[in-house]
Image (cartoon, rainbow, N blue to C red):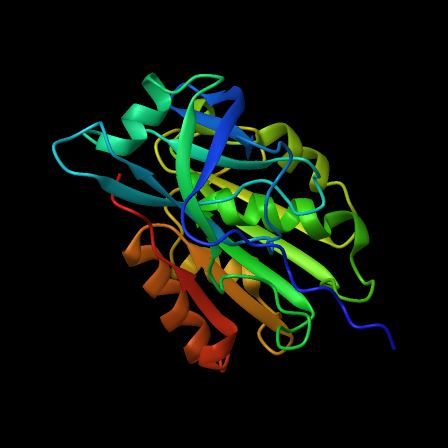
Length: 257
């Protein structure tokens, strides 16, 4: 049997050049990168992993922030991160306001174990995100949504995602399209806008919403959540009470802006 080549990875800090900037919402942008010297994406990664970026000249001291990639490894030639502006957030505001096509940013990675593992994860992947916490799940769904049930992929995927209002819907056109794929269920709740006669739920994700959306899934699902700490810990406590083993309830913390 032919051995698989080790994943490509650059040692230390690499130089990534911004090749495209896309406005996702009024306060969220997606930045596309390629290797500044050689072009294309200079590393291999797993959907759900993140990069750490370093900025030497936006404050008195160098600062670093980590952002999960929203792109999928199946999207060749680039990597992308989706950045939501944080009030008074030094790096998020810099990325949204100052960084344009042609800028070169230092980065290292990929890093992280917040991924679907075909050897360890259960066949039904359930994801809970809020705001920019949807980013790793965008990457994961881009990777697997068109090959559910195939080797190395989940059998089913469910996403419960919370946004403040319809103005804050990140990657909504893709989410709507994926919701029509057999085996995919996407539930969206708005926390600050009630839309009568729509499919949007209203309110923050809580135990009552978990009970409604996740009923009957606990024996064959792995749960992943990314967003505010209170929401993540609420989900983990809820599914643990339902008998889900702790290693099938994964959470990923936000950065600090």
